Image (cartoon, rainbow, N blue to C red):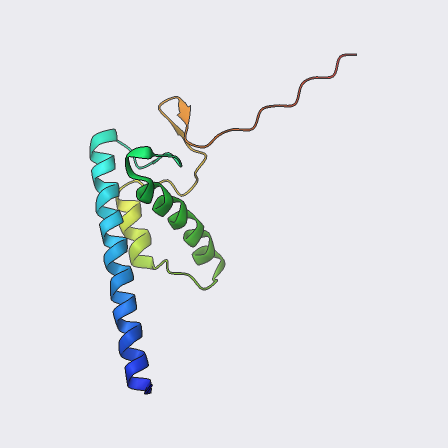
Length: 110
């Protein structure tokens, strides 16, 4: 396989990844329109792909901030920020928490 063919194949893969990202971004826009926020529950049965994508965006953002190799870009950060995306998955949503919280250990009796 020639170098040109490898670059062409990688270009197709990159384009497909961008298309997938844009589809999920549109799903997130719709979720926000309906729910008023972008805090998709981790076990969102109506669109599990969106729930997984949101989790991935948060993980990729952490890599981005650390300077590690990531699929996150400044453009994606800006687009997500424009929706009011919460980078912390422990943010409360209308009195509930989107992530299961740990129970406090029982108090020892004196």
